[in-house]
Amino acid sequence: MKTITIKLPEEEAKKLDLFVAKKHYPSKSEYIRHLIMREMGELEKENAGWLALAEKAMEKMWNNKKDDEIWSQYL
Image 1 (cartoon, helix red, strand yellow):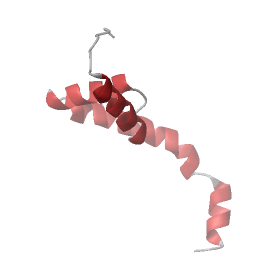
Image 2: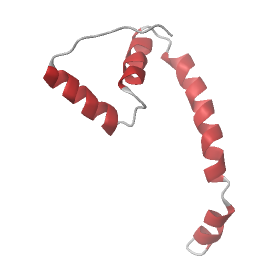
Image 3: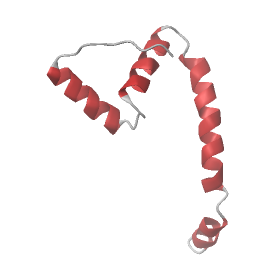
Image 4: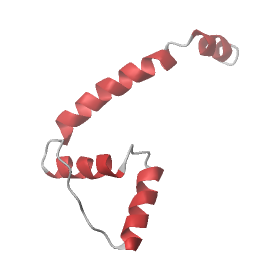
């Protein structure tokens, strides 16, 4: 990937840091990349790839037998 630099006023930079943390983005770079791709109409393709990765990562949690045993007591 190519690195670019942007300059923001201090207050905007602080707001960006808080927003990125609140929304659980991995980094400011990833959030800004997301915005650029959305504006360029490429986000849909990117989201499909991220969704596939997220589903694969969550599979271990979803197929947790211990959770099934615990929840079966309450459902």
